[in-house]
Structures are given as C-alpha cells and as structure tokens.
Length: 138
Image 1 (cartoon, helix red, strand yellow):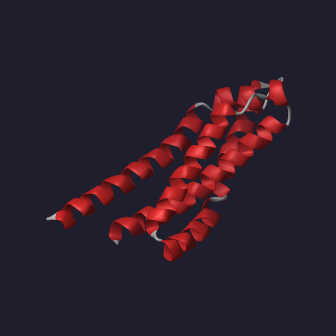
Image 2 (image 1 turned 90 degrees about the vertical axis):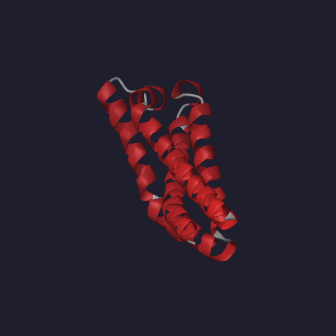
Image 3 (image 1 turned 120 degrees about the horizontal axis):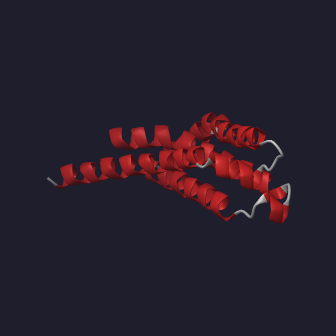
C-alpha cells in the first residue's frame, strides 16, 4: 500500500513541477509588452514588443542542451536531483527577471541579464520534460 502512495506522491510532484515550469513561460509571454517597454525601450512600441518576443524565443534554443545535460545528471545522480536542479534554475531565472532593474536604471546590462535569465529558463525546461517523464515511469 505504501508503494502506491509513494507512486502517487511522485506523480503529483512531477506534474506540479511541470506546471510550475510552464507557468513561468506563460507569464513571460503574457507580460511581453511590459517587459519590452521596461528592458527594450524604443521609439516604436512594436520594436520593443518584437525584441521582447525574440528574447522569449531564445529560451527555446537552450532546451535541447538542457535536455542533454540534465538528462545526463539524471542518469548519474538520479532523477530527483535532476528535477530539483530544473525547478531551482527555473525559479532563479524567473526571480532574475522580476528583480532586474529596467533599461533606464542600468542600460544595456538590463536586456543582457534578461537574455541570461531566459536562457536559464529554457535550459531548465528542456531538462525538466525528459526528467519528469522518466521519474514518473521509474
């Protein structure tokens, strides 16, 4: 009976982790207009929005790398460790975006830090998908 309870808890934890990972991506997309104005100011609001969405897309470029690296960590150190890394990285990337001062305060460093945060989120999301699926199956 306890094996069934452990399995349910593991599935619930993996599902919640997956939901939180994608929540961060959705929030960025939803707030892209505000992010564009804050970190990518331009005389043309459309340009700011397009730069914001370009940075959103950059996060997807690191997903395959995250899948390979975090997948290897999962194979060597265990799935739980890999999932904890992905959740921590996603939370750190999201926190960075929330705490980075805008372009008006720190200039070009602001958009560069946002790009770094999105790369971290993309890397994390790539590692999370395979890791959570393997964790549930195992």
